[in-house]
Length: 209
Length: 209
Image (tube, rainbow over all chains, first blue to last red; front, side, top):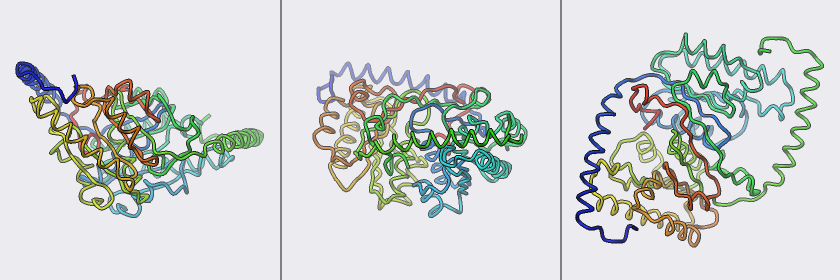
């Protein structure tokens, strides 16, 4: 059936009864969800959408006047759209710290990469400790774990001990360590079904940066 | 090895050589990606991040001064953060049309749902046809396909025939139809690994809306 066919009356009544039942079940389920909590949120996997949905949540925080912060562990001086928008429009609500210096094959200097990751994590700790800040996005931090530049056990111990109860911390990047996935409240894996890079299309403004 | 151990010099040199090689390979790969194209982008799957990464891309467009538009097929009068931010700060760059009236179990009226989906799609067609608009986000349109309120073949035929070559169209929602997945340029499936709803946590501002 397409949307242009007329719908028989008894179908409409059946639909209405079915949806009333569904709504009742859903309302009961929603009533059981009463808790509020600062979440540890992980976006991982090879697909697109890990950082962009992190920025989507940062934008939601800004809309709700919730102070928030971004620490970028890989992208450094890149003039991304998210950086431009946050620093030019919302600097009062959202701190933006680009601590990375690019991918490790760009710097080609392991000591510098490690120092950048450590400096990023130091900044992140200060931001997370501040209870006024309601969400901290640690963009591409999983890459720093993957290269061994940051110790996931140390990061998890810090979150457990010092994250204020209502602060959300979002960690993005492919290859999230198992210990992080096990400890997080919300984990999404972005699975790549098709990507235009394979068809020779380059990274484009609006889509990738 | 953690980030605090000193790194032997030969390890550093080896790292540097390896990364120089990796960079050369990567540069060659990037040079082969020269195309630009308005993409059909699909975010589907049961995990979180489908709409929020759509809004992240809309924010990137705004940052690059690319006119864009959002049509919401399900969420209607809900005061979401994304709606508030776009309508109060960026109405000049991004049109926002909430055409839905809520989930089908909320309206409990199939005719009204179908009329809302058809009106949303009519609005979407006008927006997509306008070559000045560089990205159109069709938020939760996959839900309308799933309930049979919109015909995916009709939508795909329209995109094929009338979408300007440089316009990006983003379609979100779980259960994307197979024909849409097959036709799209970029498809990500958000896989749910863990969700706090299961632990009794309710939808929270900044995170879900």
